[in-house]
Image (cartoon, rainbow, N blue to C red; front, side, top):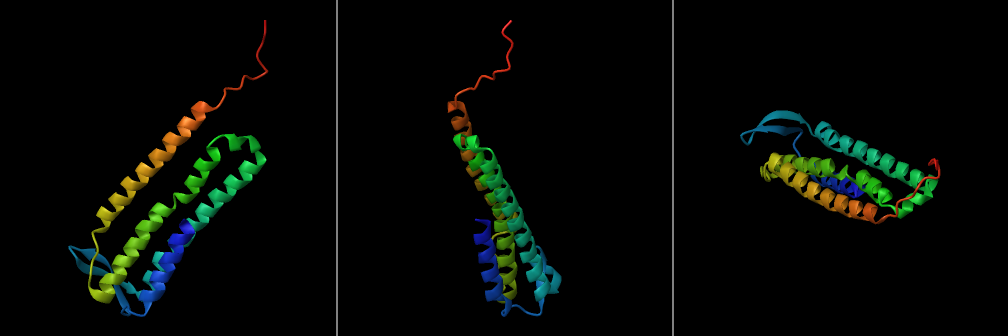
Length: 157
């Protein structure tokens, strides 16, 4: 999922780049621009964090794959699924960054604002929290169904 959002962001940046003025408004107070940056710099500042987030997601997912091969018994649990979900959690800040980039580009190309960023961020956090809650409940239910193993190191005095 992080790679999909990165690809979408790159497509947005490529399609809007030619429509942007040389100096792009990126910070707004009461809907009026009060911060300016070159279009190359703002595009880089919007895409570089996304590349870093995808890298973090790949490291988490790759680590999960290595651990699941090293500990094959973990396939009986939902630990692998939980760790893969954690690798995809970087998509939440990516979605917010992509929305911010789209809002900046739309304003500078067409003088149109989308909904305020804080409202969009709140929506993403609530929806992401609900989805995580659902996965957590599913994982807890699977852990409860697992048989309890008794270790052989108990003393029988």
